[in-house]
Image (cartoon, rainbow, N blue to C red):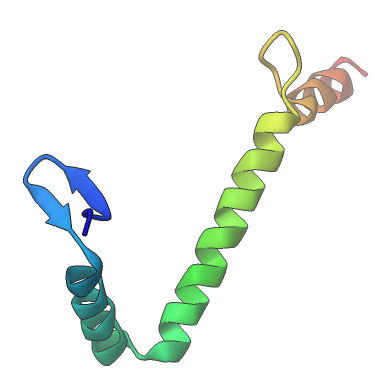
Length: 72
């Protein structure tokens, strides 16, 4: 069976990941882990949308709006 994650000395397969997940559920509980996953997903989604908003010159559209309001 191939390891799931191979990064240097870490060779994690399914049994190791299952033990880590079980310990996390025991320590934090299922609800807190779900909330953590939800927050992580929202953060990634916000980051991706912010990256899409950038203009060709590297400024975001929000920064452009701030500059235009200062000129007025």
